[in-house]
Image (tube, rainbow, N blue to C red; front, side, top):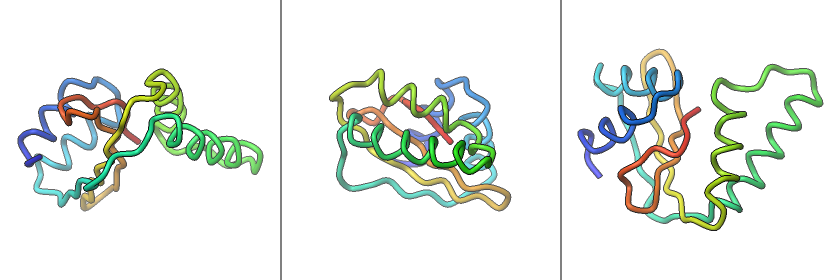
Length: 107
């Protein structure tokens, strides 16, 4: 996956976090893509626990976290790749479909 492919995947996802990640990429942000995929169910278990811990601690969840948890749950047993976008202002985690063409969630 190259920068243009990641930008296209983010552009198709209309969440505020995806828009912000896309803006950072277009401004020249660095990015990485995981070399292996993980089960959406496994990622859901990890991120839903983190979300619950933040809520239990009275901390505000990260932007896009609740939506990411819901989207990962909806993906069921599908395979997900992770991308990191490291911008000058923010850092994002992007959850990508197995074929790397769709952004499942962004936070």
